[in-house]
Amino acid sequence: MPLKPIARILSIAGSDSGGGAGIQADIKTITALGAYASTAITALTDQNTLGVHNILPVPADFIRAQIRSVIDDIGADAIKIGMLGHRDTIIAIATEIKQVINRCPYLHVIIDPVMLAKGGVALLPKESITTLQDYLFPLAHVLTPNIPEAEQLSRKTITTVSDMCAVASYLHKTTGATILLKGGHLSGDQITDILIDENELYRFTAPRIPSRHTHGTGCTLASALATYLAQGIKLPDAVEQARLYVRQAILHAPQLGAGSGPLWHGINTHPPPSI
Ligand SMILES: Nc1ncnc2c1ncn2[C@@H]1O[C@H](COP(=O)(O)OP(=O)(O)OP(=O)(O)O)[C@@H](O)[C@H]1O
Ligand SMILES: [Mg+2]
Image (cartoon, rainbow, N blue to C red; front, side):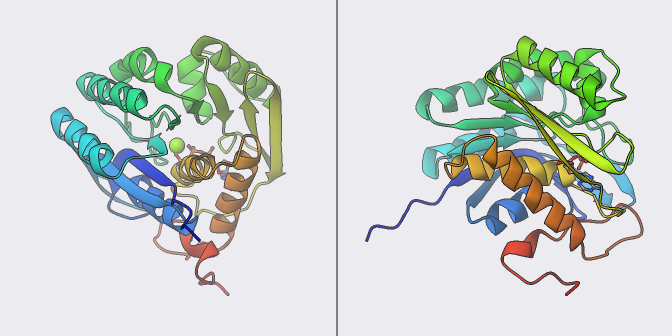
């Protein structure tokens, strides 16, 4: 029997030396969910669970070269984009991805518009936000902002789930992309994520897990979603399954670091370390 081709996910994101978020979270997630991870690294960060201490951007041409090398040889079924950088980096990545989309018409493009690290350090310069909207958003199938990012993008304030629905709907109308608005930053015992596509608005609600080990939840969710979509699972099921994976990974966090600790990405392949 011929082998079923493995789903290929290219992650374009920054490196987190602490291993909890960014490229490292993406590779762990994609591998744990049975797909193949390749990368184009946009920046190195000197980072641990306590915060981001330094950022070393990768030159735009070198990011493009990484994308080209991966696509020319390995290919991709989904591209997941995370931490970016200055305007010229975003424009270079958009130019390259346009070419990839022309060559791979079935490609899923998932953009996590990362702006701030959990500790509050800016990962995207303010002046890059409009470049992101103008150049990259038109190429996205799914955007996964958190609440502060959605507020920046819409210039609206979000304090309730009904505000989330209104902003998700506004972002869907203005970008044309499917929007997954993550609710982790609203307070309360329950967390609701909102998904809106051209057909429907879905609410996913679950109890908040009382844990400080939530470093990289956003990267992990977007990578899991990219993987499930590349594996042929449709929305909204792909979101449901990605959320489940993130929850399990938070529940079995390895209790590392003195700050916002990493998740346990190996839940599907290795017994949780806490058991
Ligand atoms: N304490 C928690 N318990 C359960 N689920 C959570 C918790 N915190 C976040 N999540 C889930 O994790 C996912 C990511 O949401 P979040 O709002 O934290 O994104 P983010 O701010 O982009 O994360 P990051 O800080 O990693 O960039 C969402 O599906 C959210 O529901
Ligand atoms: Mg995030």
